[in-house]
Structures are given as C-alpha cells and as structure tokens.
Length: 87
Image (cartoon, rainbow, N blue to C red; front, side, top):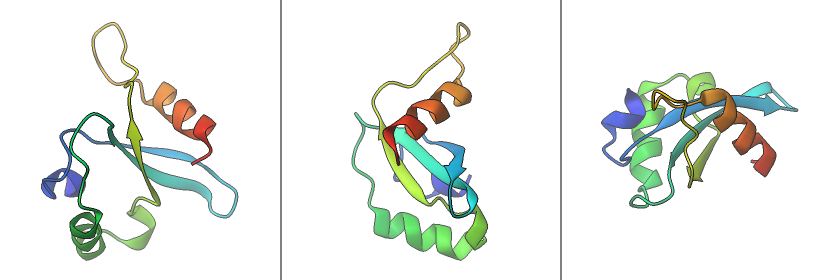
C-alpha cells in the first residue's frame, strides 16, 4: 500500500529473493513499459512509513509479468526471474 500511495507506479509487486548477507531481500517490481518512477519521492515516503526491514532493497523494472490462466500474477515465477537476473 505504501508503494502504491506514492503515485509513482502504474503497477507494483513486492517479492522476496534470497540474499547472502540477510538471508532474504525485499524487491519491488514495476512495469518496464510504464513511466520511470521518481525514486526520490518513493524513498522519502517509504522511509517515513515503513520499518527498515520492510523497505525494498531493490527496485526492478519487469518487461513480462508472469500470469496464471486466471490472469493473476505468479509471484513464484516473478521471483525466479528477478533472482536469475542477479539483482
């Protein structure tokens, strides 16, 4: 809800990926074909409203959003795709 409230994303999905230092990292994915977010605004709102461990460590533009047959986002495939990129 906090990331959507920034008004900087047309769509957003938050996932977790493995992280060597912390065990897991929060990643915010947004559409690559949308407008480029102003990350200064995003970080200011996120820093004021979320605890440090809940804040995204990475923001990733995603071209192809994996969806199931009902059109719902497949978070497992999205996480695998982002993790394969080496974010």
